[in-house]
Image 1 (cartoon, rainbow over the protein chains, first blue to last red):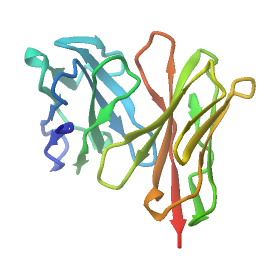
Image 2 (spheres, rainbow over the protein chains, first blue to last red):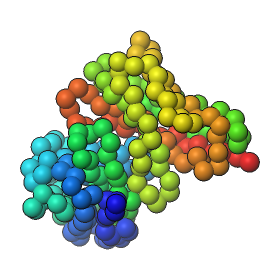
Image 3 (cartoon, chains in turn blue, yellow):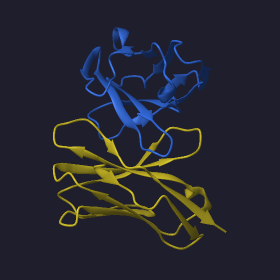
Image 4 (cartoon, each protein chain N blue to C red):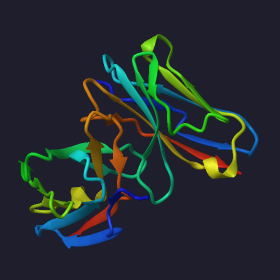
Length: 113
Length: 112
């Protein structure tokens, strides 16, 4: 069984530029999560999807962050414009039933200069 | 406000000995706890979990203990192996909410 796929693995951009991250969850997993992990911290939830619906986006900075999950499969997380403080690892996870076992992708390490 | 705390950023243990990783929480509404293991350049992987109705859960070399009155849980690894060297995150769930709250992680190094 293929795991959660994320791309790109690394991204370096200048501040004020846009950036997008892509995630392909495990086949059949209806729930998809985006997390941000700052250096030395644990992952923090940004948004959770149940199929195509964003059911928890309370932690997503909506002024610059957006996300979509078309057709309830792949998902894209976008930042526009990026700020220096957005430098972090962005993790995607998926789960089959409930939040108890979430499978994480390798993450995208974003560096904003 | 850090609701899940891992106060030891790092731990070094000799191969074959017991590793004990600790986690404290402040939110009394948490009712399910998980441990994740993370290798460099990889995402966290689920290791073991425990419901608040239990005080112990065991899976092979890994055992998690929960002390609800102290709002404390611990992960025991016996015997420790070099491949166990990784960052371990404690995480908690609250009731019907599906949001995992993670601690800051403890880096375990198992030495030969």
